[in-house]
Length: 253
Ligand SMILES: O=P(O)(O)O[C@H]1O[C@H](CO)[C@@H](O)[C@H]1O
Ligand SMILES: O=c1cc[nH]c(=O)[nH]1
Image 1 (tube, rainbow, N blue to C red):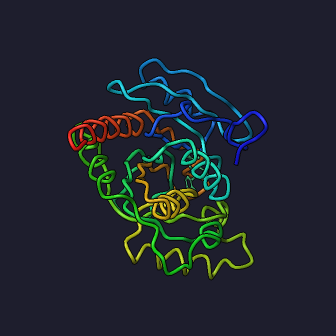
Image 2 (cartoon, rainbow, N blue to C red; image 1 turned 60 degrees about the vertical axis):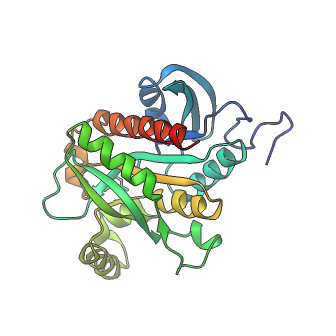
């Protein structure tokens, strides 16, 4: 949906402002930091939770766009980015650890997401899985291996309530929240965050590609407050994965 200036209504971009490859952090404050990893980064727009920079990798336009926290604003960003030509998305964010053996700073490369949120139910019935694109997942795994990162590959838990995850005992439905969390862990989920399901479901509907890499920073209040992880390795892995995809897309065109 365009405004009177021909810009997308929320993200404030038009065709040509963004590349087909887009990195999607939640936090607007992380956009400029990620853009510094691109060649010739330029500020494009900032409106509400959406900040946009565009630069280049291997000569190809690549953008960084913040989604804000949660699936509602993420779905808006993905809709509007697709409307102006984006077709490949990598979420770069923070997440809570869900499996034993995970250490703070480890990377979670996600293959799919549990749809424990409301937004994607307004697109498709809950039986439809939120699944990442296999070429994007493979590029992230290859990038993480090249850069020597410690990483896990698996399913993310996408939820609406941050505090329902990190302080479940405060909630009137604490027993239900904890039982469901234990079920996700038993099923093998590796990390918990708030946006991947929307990115994956919308990418399926519109036949686009998406994946995600997230730094694990803890999943309880005390650990989160004290953690001192850096996002740099995650950003480098995401950038290297985009380079891998650009080269493979060029070979197949
Ligand atoms: O670090 P980002 O990308 O914002 O991701 C995580 O951090 C926020 C919660 O603190 C949520 O958006 C969650 O998904
Ligand atoms: O535990 C965490 C950490 C970051 N983001 C989340 O949503 N949960």
